Amino acid sequence: MTERLYYRDSFLYVFDAEVREVAENPRPAVILDRSAFYPTSGGQVFDTGEITLPGSNQKMRVTEVGETEDGHVVHYLDAPLKDIKPGTRVRGLIDPTRRRDHMQQHSGQHVLSAAFVRLFDMHTVSFHMADEYCSIDLDTPTLTKEQIESAERLANEIILENRAVEIRFVTREEAGKLGLRKFPVADRDELRIIDIHDIDLSACGGTHVNQTGQIGCILLRKTERVRQGWRVEFVAGQRAVATARRDFTTLTEAAAMFSAHIYDVPPQARKSLDEIRSLRKQREQSQEELADAQAAAMLAGTSEANGRKLVVRTFSDRDVNSIKLLAQKLTRLATNVVALLATTSPQPSLVFAQSPGQPLDMGSLMKETMPSLGGRGGGTKDMAQGGVPKIDGIEAALAAIAKRI
Ligand SMILES: [Zn+2]
Image (cartoon, rainbow, N blue to C red; front, side):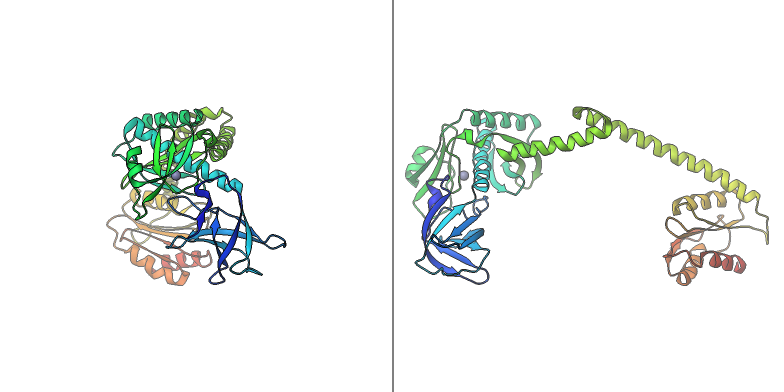
């Protein structure tokens, strides 16, 4: 079992150790007699850093850290192992920025979970640390905005009070006497307890700060209903500052579009959406009116032959919906209209329609026409539409159908 140096000191960034085992497959890895590297476990992700060979230039990047079932910490390396074998003395260097970030997030979680218990008796059932944010799942059927804000306020007060965060090693019995309520499932008798003065007592193997002030601050973000209760996303320390900075940049960009103050973005956005909705309605109305007028003019210019008015027309500047609308208007203005319409842009399309009661079948006509144009389409007896890949042949196809029917 690897001696875990971070158990007693989370601020130990440099350590010396002896190689116990090396592996090359599936990727280079090394096991040491002792290590300050934290392996992924308990919701917290691994440390990164370097392993060096004192007295030589050899430097290997530790890209991931895991643990074996029997408690060995495995350091995965980015380069093959040269001159390293069991017994070799090496030096480990932890990436301090990443470690500090993890300490802030993880300690922030203890404080936040404690705040939810203290205020609302809501217990944390799981903790997750991702690259951008962390989350806890609370065992509660409801969670209000006010409760979120109160918990955030209390957590930040505890941070500001700079309470001591102590690491204790005790037996299960001693832990019970100290007031520990949630015991880990393990056969070991010795427990590692994290004691945040007068607010939280947890059995935990993670890396933590020494004083709550080192967490910096905590910012609660999204909340969502999950299977076991409510999930609360949060960021602590430098992550909170980076997140607030990104929020501000995003809001500033949005505010500039409206030439408004950032706090006026929501009403401005609402106003713009209302305008868009109203303009859309106006446009639909105008299109209807335009289609009515166009249909009337087209019919007036079409003479009757064989008892019906056949309108054949190809447009180059309107979408399929507008020629469909025009076809509807044409076939409703009179009882004997057949319309063979097409558009070449933006998307080459065909629309066939007839006044209700006319004997042709537009759906079949469309299906028969499509193969020669390489497209697909169909519809009902009175109205059909189809899309084709290119404009070639559209007008010729319409002329052929007009001749045939
Ligand atoms: Zn912890």
